[in-house]
Image (cartoon, rainbow, N blue to C red; front, side, top):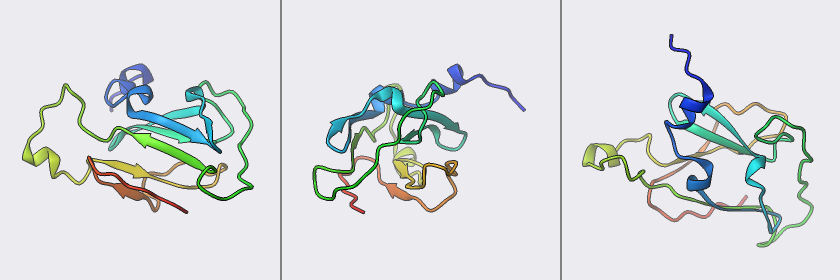
Length: 130
C-alpha cells in the first residue's frame, strides 16, 4: 500500500479556509485552528469541531451548550461545489459521493465515516436543527 504523507493528502481535497466559509460556535467566530483535520480515503479532507484538541494536537477547552435558540449552537456555511480545477460533467454531478457528509457525535468518540450521517446534496441550501 502507498504511504502518503498528510501534506500531500490535504491537496486531494478542499482546504478548510476554502471549504468552510463561515463558522460560529455559540454566536462567536470559530477559530479555524480548532477545526481538526483528518483524512478518509473515500471522502478526502474531513474536519472535526469542538473535539477538545486543535489542528496541532494541542488540548483546548470544549465549548458547552447551555442555551437554545437561533444564536446558540453551531452555525456553518460550506462550499459544496466542485473545485475550479475539476471539470464538471453529468457522471460527476450524479455521483453519490458528491456533497457533504455531516456526523454529529460525542467529543470522546473517534469519527467513523460509516456511522449514521446526514448527507447534503451538492449545490443545495440545507438547514439542520437538532
